Image (cartoon, rainbow, N blue to C red; front, side):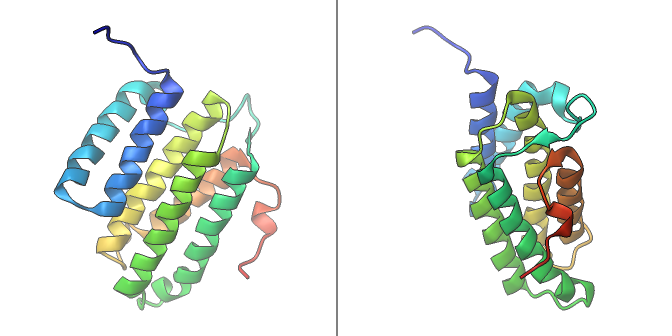
Amino acid sequence: MTSFKLPTLIARTLACTVTVFAVASGSAFAQAADSSAHDAHDAHEAHSSTLNLDQGERWETDEPLRKGMLEIRHAVEKASLDFSTGALSAQQAEELTLVIDENVNFIIEQCKLEPEADANLHVILAEILNASSVLKSEPQSAVGLPRIHGALESYAYYFNHPDWSTEHDH
């Protein structure tokens, strides 16, 4: 049997999909898969673990990316008031992490960006997923929701999402 390498984009997508599964399930198997996904992702993306602009400009987005990120943003905004008053419950954190997981899955499945933009997006999505995992276990942790906010700010800085800064929670 001949060995072959998956193209970087496919390998990255598979690694992120395994990561999403691992974050969502929380099982011992998932933790092992998560570790493997991060190892595979790191091996393929060591050169792009930091965010970059597209020759000084923000990366273009597509409709699935904008839709998924808006859903995440709206859910985060909804939870932020309770978080800021110290009243974010475990149930609210669980609901938020479900919205995040569903929308990250949607983005990974539907979003079609050029490879360089995709690599930058995966850095942001990994940050959101990692922070979401902490949020799920420790709703008031400074590592959870604040890091998700930071990742959303990075998205706004690095990606051209029309009206992102002027949209309001409905």
